[in-house]
Length: 377
Image (cartoon, rainbow, N blue to C red; front, side, top):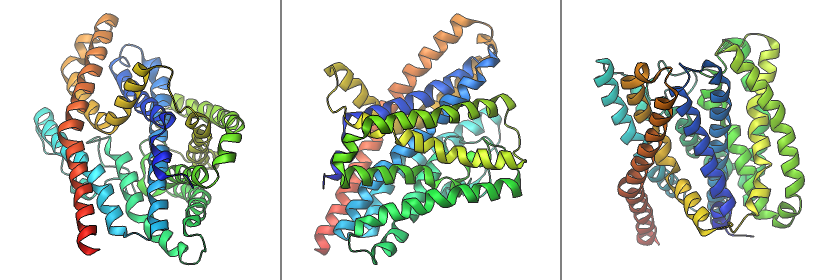
């Protein structure tokens, strides 16, 4: 079997990570232009939707490699939890504190919402307000890495190949989540974006698709490469109707989903969208060497900084919107200037956070887990 390192670090996967965060940042940047060109709302919706779903899929792909390693080595779940926590939670809490400070300064009230401390803000219902809006995606990932190892280990006890618990568990999620989303829609009539899309316990199948494709790559590398072109064609065929339906939802606005058709198609959207994106993985994964060293450096840097950038660009955007929304409205040149300046500041902030906060704490956490393992060996 190929190494789990290979599953996570191919240039094609780095490229997808860079594309995903680029789509999200570009989508949010359109908020600067929406007051002037409201028709851009559809583009904003599609870019944000595809970017976030791709980030969730890649998170599942990465976590899948680590879970396979955990099952094969019969490692300790606590070590897996510690390593994931040191990678994800420091940035989360850093920017949670920053969001509290900004909210208090800009709106003169403390946002409250203590459930953000344990990432329960959108567990079964939408978050109460627009505070810390980027956190819902992190909540999905954190609860997934917290809960997924337990049923996987239970299933693995009954299998000769322990790692084959991955496809069984992934398929369970992929098949059950659409039905649960339909029931939720018919009962609660949520808004498709602020409600259905961001409910933590209704979205684990986005990560399950990544985990399933990671297993396929590691267990069956020959068909993974052989069928890459056909899978990519199938992926585009799946993504096209997903994009068309999402455009229809965007044109309707963030309305409540109430009809049976809404329940069926909206529930299916969040199943087929990550499935279509997952089908692109084999083809891009074959791109092991970029065409130039400069492209490799840019893509690798953006991939490394993507987690910090996901957090850093939002507060900077909110400050810019708060201070300059009226000044740049109907001023195309000022909108472009503000957008480029915001992107540059966001990248600088992300690089600083990664270098002086995220990376040191991640190394500290990894070293601490290793030292505990050595002391108990």
